[in-house]
Length: 409
Length: 142
Image 1 (cartoon, chains in turn yellow, brown):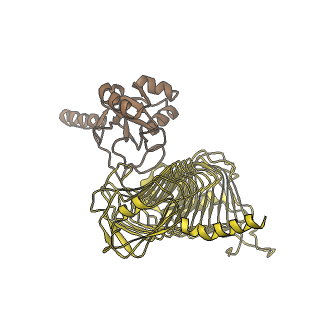
Image 2: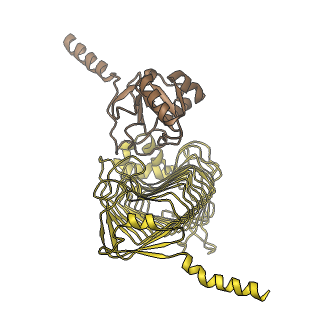
Image 3: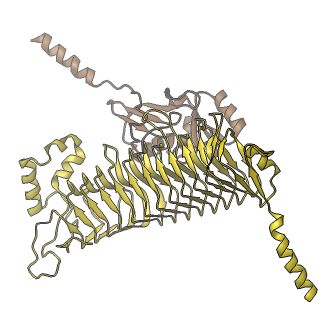
């Protein structure tokens, strides 16, 4: 018994020796990362010392960790840089430059294929085509990376973090700038996308499709060409995000298409052409959001059922709500509307008369977008007022029976 | 007076011209799903007899829209093909590959090819299944 425990103890002391550190340095035998990968065994750590390494297409099929001490890898436009093909690989702290432009999926700065439990952290990727692509890989972490693209309208470009058929990922604290789409998910379930900043991308700051049970929290989506568009997914939580400065005829703070059973709470939509655009959505709970200074606060296109809007702030939007159709199945309750001109005689904080948030003019603009030029004209104000007093076109049930008098904090 | 009537009639008739137009990649939005059209190998277009043009970012979006609006009268069905991006070809004469290894923008893995030879080359390389336009419509329940 004693002998066994003694042997186990000795084994524990020897365990660290089973995994070793390999140092890559310019003036040493191991002076390229490729060589280090070749000699490494499973569970080894490769430490790459400061310097620029001119390498590309580094395929990794062992469970190893690569840590950079301010090392730069320059692919000289000959290909992608890291290809992860085994589980439990970590890539940390690298600066990756000059990746070849290509639609072929291998040519990303970092491409992960059939490799689970990966960690991609603290890297900086400059001007890639695709920065990080994950295919068919689960339980990975993409954390604290900076991706700086140089995408331009008309020029073909790739995405910052592109996920395909990969579940249980954590994508957090990344800063993605000027790519085609900042974060793109397709068939990616059970993921957490948090604390990212995705700005100035040509198309979408965030786009996901067919990706369920995901959490998108505390992100900032700012000044993206088409805003954020999410589609064909359910059981989504979108919380505490900032959607701002998405201007354009086809730019949306948040576009929802075929999204079901989801929570959209505590988000801020500021200065977008359209704060939220919703088409084919059902059972979404919109709560405690702030929609301020948008062209349209919420534009509801066809096929939206059983959505609830509660405790939201609608402040200074040209159109608070725009609606399409005669029947309404959505509820609006206890929201604050800056355009509400009712009174509160019993001082309970709730307006005594209901508020109808859809203006008649919004129907005219829906059918003929060019008529927007009449916004703020006296004639439009008059017809809006007459519709407010006695609604003919707007659905009767589309009203907030308890509009709040004071802004919600 | 007569001359004036002729000229005006001619001008009115010119307005009913139904011709396809070039897709502005990076600017146009898909009529079905609203996504910006960027993929030059999968974008597609419909032109009605009255001249109204609908553009789509993927062939599957065009098919979904065809299904949603059977009442429309179309003059042209046009698709981009894999080997000749940006050049719209007649959808009726193209061959289609559905293959998991060749993704398309909206998840249907559907790509068009100019003719059966080019389709077969890709079929050999990536697997999947080839369809004619009529077979494809049946596949999408049209």
